[in-house]
Length: 97
Image 1: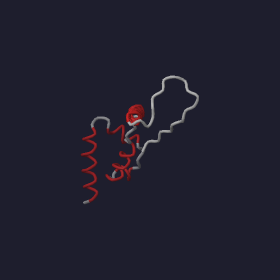
Image 2: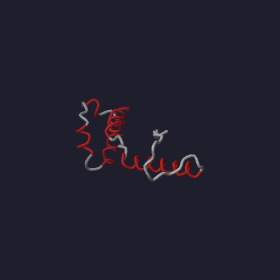
Image 3: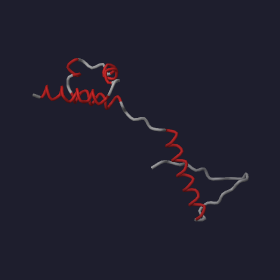
Image 4: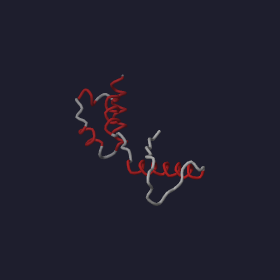
């Protein structure tokens, strides 16, 4: 019974994946035993389709938060904006939470 259920789930999954499903499954290099187990195929597909981070977007978002914090600190009088060379300054290290 479980084998039939796995087969039905696999067929439904392959149908839902569309035309490229066979190519994707072939690229996973599954043994015939693995290819017939729904859980194994699903786990391999999950690992195959790991979402990638959008580094440019995350960097821009981080820089925006830094600018907002600097503006807040400037408004509170903790720091002041200087647009000319100075004799000394304190370096700032920004670490994301």
